[in-house]
Amino acid sequence: MFVAQSFGELEVTSFAGFAVATMTVRDRFEAGGETVAGFYRSMAVFAEVDGRWLWAAGQTMRAS
Image (cartoon, rainbow, N blue to C red; front, side):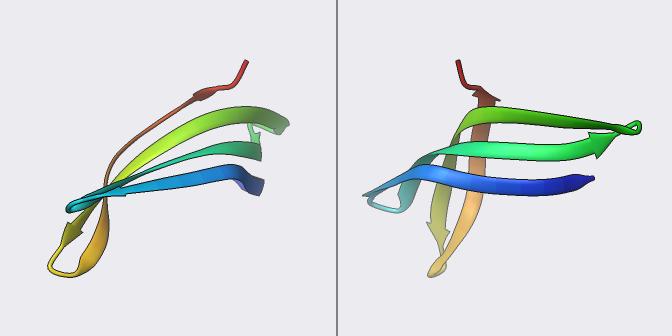
């Protein structure tokens, strides 16, 4: 279960019909009685469909 999540370094670039967002993410969650924390870089792609922005794809990996 997620305990906390925060975002930073958010950048959004818009294109015709889609947008790409990059960000850093700090997560903390509990699993199997243990608390797990991590720092990640994430990218999300959104598509504009019928005037609405829909999440189309994404990738998250541990930041070094």
